[in-house]
Image 1 (cartoon, one colour):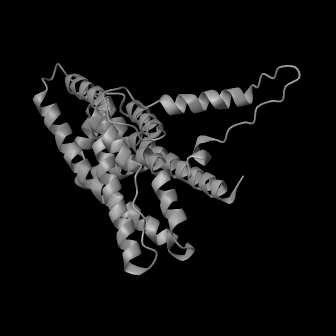
Image 2: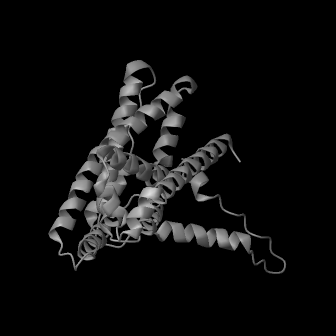
Image 3: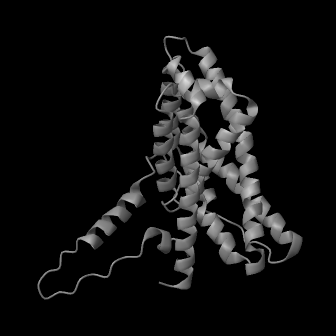
Length: 266
């Protein structure tokens, strides 16, 4: 394994660990005494978030970003890591996360407002209506050309300056731009778990898998088509064949292909 692939593998592992910590923190907060009391009184996780203060909601949103978004940020972070000098790598990555997080904090405020509006407009006996409407919009958006444009932009990064203020400015701007296109790609998918009357965390996990898998697909021409799992299915198929090779008599086994997270580093 080359040094570049080793660095990518370490970064990928570290990001997954931080994401896992975010999931554990979310589940721990949901299983706390306040959630238990709300559940016993007939409340839901979303209702508890609505009744909590802005600080509680902001904390939950940051944890959601850590849990759901971090796995999708491996390519841009690795791009910064490979494009910068050793002494400034950590600072540039931090500036990238600052710009990215700022965009998603603003988007989170908008999505929270949309969630509250949807719940206020839905009749009490139709608690699933907002989720059904948002789910339909999410399916249409997932297959739309606009979704592909956003995904293509998420994979395109401008070169960074090498030194000084310009390098920090470029990293921060890269975070802002990547956050905007990421929000354009994922806004309705992030809204869907928020409007569900139950099964919030299961839906979050499903959306996380979808967002991660669709970032594995290469850039493509915008068109109406379903997208999200093609490359991941092909990668799993290759891995499965690598685990269970079938070698004909007199032939040498095929060389196992590199894992996705290593082959996607160039």
